[in-house]
Length: 143
Ligand SMILES: O=C(CO)COP(=O)(O)O
Image 1: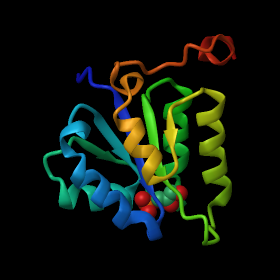
Image 2: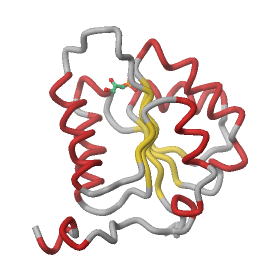
Image 3: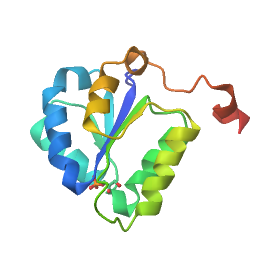
């Protein structure tokens, strides 16, 4: 089993081109991770960057956001890059909020836009094989 940290990638439809360009530009850095993505986002990344290790989960509106939320709760993620579309209503808005909430609860490094994602990908914390929070009050065993 891979010992690489796991990074989740998600993009709403209006931001999928931004995500694909981000992945292409940062292929070398992303290759240090096992990637997980919601269904359509993962498909777009796989089409353009076939050498990256990426696991596709369900599409966001069909439960993909919740699957990634469960991975956060289980301490399986090192970080989350989620390019959110702030200008469109989403049928699964509650799932989006729940995912972000868990990232906050577990103090997970989370980038919601391109400029922050570029910074996050260069962070030693993200690449340091650390997958669980050091904040005592949010360690899963204590909840
Ligand atoms: O809707 C999403 C996140 O809320 C993204 O899902 P897809 O990657 O399947 O489009």
